[in-house]
Amino acid sequence: MDNEKFMDSAEKMATELAKFTKDMNINEEMFLDLIEDSLYPVEQFFANYSCAIMEIETKFKVLNEQFSLKYDGNPIESIHSRVKDYDSIIRKVIRKKIPRDLDSIEEQINDIAGVRVICSFVDDIYRLADCLLQQDDITLIRRKDYIKNPKPTGYRSLHLIVSVPIFLENEKKDVKVEVQLRTIAMDFWASLEHKLRYKKNISPQMLERLSHELTDCAEISASLDGRMQNVRNLILAENGKQ
Ligand code: 0O2
Image 1 (cartoon, rainbow, N blue to C red):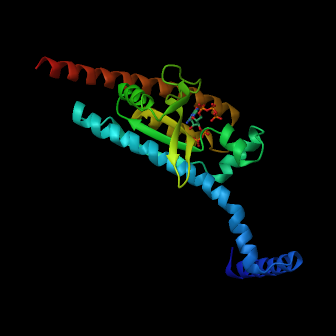
Image 2 (image 1 turned 90 degrees about the vertical axis):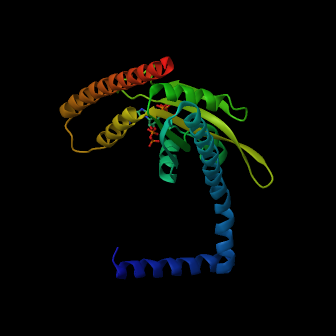
Image 3 (image 1 turned 120 degrees about the horizontal axis):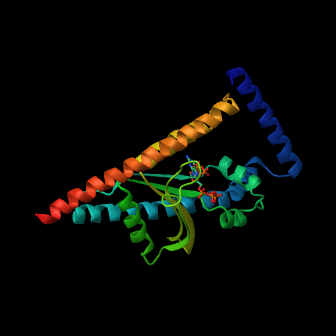
């Protein structure tokens, strides 16, 4: 938007605001307070998920540290977290016909907080998942093993929906987090497939061909993971002999 258009719409908004506050018989200060009050529950809603992410990230960082002492190597390559943005939440609310209130959204959408843990080896995924789930403040809500049962696309990852308590000023609140654990190879595949899926102007025939190609790549990538795991097992066995 160029400067002139921006000034124009800012002026229009100011006029609308003046009219609104006059009609409502409130001053602009009161109007801003009103906005702030109504935004507070939404801000708190998102803040809860950010806090839950911090809790889960810390748990994985602690496990990573401890594993590195015990097994001489870090099982976690990287951790990526995000709170689902407002637009994506609204799109999911519409798609799944979820009532448009915060309680229903909190109850019915499981992936507002997401933590993705990238590991070097498949074994580490299961070991980390077990360690997380045995912690007494973690409740498992749902587990989907797309490594043992890959999606038809070829997608592989271990998905856990967990609930973790966060401690606020005057209350303890259980918050849901989706944890996705995958290897570097699985992550490489998923990231490229995700990007290609949203490419426009691809003919249906080409789309069909590409999806076969991608499923094929997922098989190759899984076989690479298997071989790397074997190499690691052989090294560990050799070290055990010494
Ligand atoms: P984003 O942007 O990654 O968040 P639900 O989420 O419960 O409504 P469902 O089907 O039970 O739906 O969830 P599922 O399939 O267990 O997990 C969904 C998430 O897994 C997706 O989130 C992706 O992150 C990932 N995923 C699942 N299948 C694929 C796939 O074929 N390719 C890729 N690249 N990722 C996949 P979102 O919400 O789609 O997106």
